[in-house]
Image 1: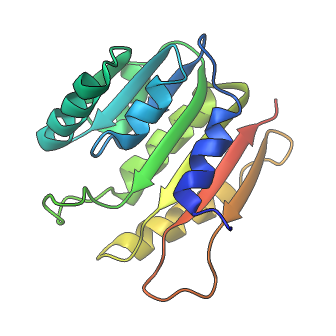
Image 2: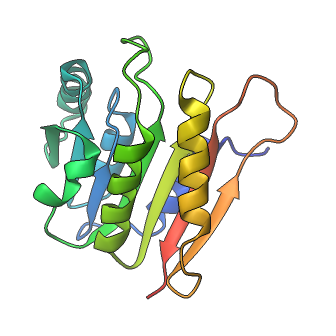
Length: 182
């Protein structure tokens, strides 16, 4: 069976994570990715601009007995103010928090700043997964900005791939994956 993009994103990151690694969840949402990363990494830094996201994530982590995640109520563009160690893996889920205010969406300008800072902070062999949800107002603009930015990364420094359905209706989400080579 073909994997859904979100499942592939986890497998892609799982391959490089271990008990000594640092991970970043740039868009914590309901805490699914934060919990996933925390189960594999030494420490996870998780970002969101909505208190509701932090509350839902903390609740999820408490239920699972996970304590190695630092939940940060701040935009992912400020990742460098919190994360000083080299990053082994990072993930974004672009768009909006399901079940919350759908007018609060990730924005191209802050997302690109965050991506750039995370790529700079990645250790060699480190990986970045970006789930792009774009079926909402403003989503196409962010999708295009991210694809343009990622497609212009130096191929000697990064390998960048996409994984997406091509016969689906209703703007299905897709995955952009990057690995730091040097």
